[in-house]
Structure formats: structure tokens, C-alpha cells
Length: 223
Ligand SMILES: *Cc1c(COP(=O)(O)O)cnc(C)c1O
Image (tube, rainbow, N blue to C red; front, side, top):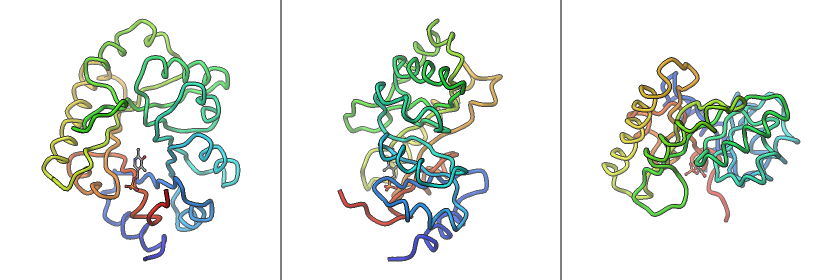
């Protein structure tokens, strides 16, 4: 197993300048985060609220934390004071909660709309019709403490590269259509979060701006 520093160097070198690496540190220790931090990594992602809140407390305050997992409305308040991007906004109710909690701490929190692009059944992620309805709803238009910064999706867990490519391409098309229909004048709407350890090179070829890489960087997780 190579060191975190070696992995980070290799992955960072393989990414075009305009693509940012979200180092997914879930289920890895604060010491692992610190090692990547020492080598210059400042952007980290976590998928559990409690684990994120604990790491935020312990680790340097110039780390930019992204939340990438399913977010329950009753836990929003624990991360809103410091999180810099929530990748997994997939309902109006969740956006309303983020908006309200962000308002309480005087923040504007950037969120990505999560889309269901995989073939696998999943409870999480919007389809285009749902997203359109949400973006047109008066409740959404009244929100002042969130900004939609782009889209996020996860491809099917498969060895079929063409299938994965097709799904990433679809997310890119969704991004372009939303941009044209709702965010044409909004420079904040700019991110396409797609690609993980097994498929981030493909995702970059298809236009990803944020790759979320965990195991290739920190090693396998023990579940
Ligand atoms: C765990 C996770 C990742 C990283 O997965 P790896 O395969 O370890 O790179 C990316 N995105 C989300 C949403 C995750 O939960």
C-alpha cells in the first residue's frame, strides 16, 4: 500500500487544473486527514454528520469541508455553521431546512442538487422533473440563505465503462439544461460533482469539476 502522500501526488497530478479533488476521509482517522493536509490538501468530504462535526472540531480551521452523504433534516443544524458545500440536496424540505438554519447563523450555504443517474434503485436523488418543480416553486424562490452551485450524481456500481460514461454524460446534460433554464445569469451555478475512486478519470473526461475520491487516496475502509 502506498502512502497517502504518494496517492495524493499521483491523483492530483492526473487532474486538470480546473477540477478539484474532494478527499473523502469518511471512516478514516483525523491523523489520515492531517497527513493529506500536510501535503497541501485543504478540501475534504464526509458523509456522516457526527463524524464530520467531530473532525471539524479537531482539525485545522482552514480546511474546507464538504458534506457528500444523505442528509436528514434534523441533523442539518450541526453542520450548517461551518460546511462549505452540501453535495446532496434532494428535496425542497431539505433545502428549506438548510435555508432556515443557515439564516440563524447568518450564512449563505452552497448546495448541489443530487440527481439519480444510476440504473440501480435508490431512494436518493432527484429526476429532472422534480428538480424543475422545485426550482420553480415560490418556496424555493424565497430562500435567501442557500445558493444552488450545481449538480451531483453517482454512477451505477458496475465494471461496464460505457454504462458509467453514459450516466456521467447524462448528468452533464442535466447541468447544461438547468444552467440554461434557471441559472443562465448566475456564476455560482458552476459545479458538476461526479467521479469516485473507480471512475473519476471517466468523470473528468465527461466534464466533472469536483471528484470525490476516498479509497484510492486513504486506502480501503473497514465497514
Ligand atoms: C464514499 C463516497 C465517495 C468515495 O468513494 P471511493 O470509492 O472510496 O472513492 C464518493 N462519493 C460519495 C457520495 C461517497 O459516499
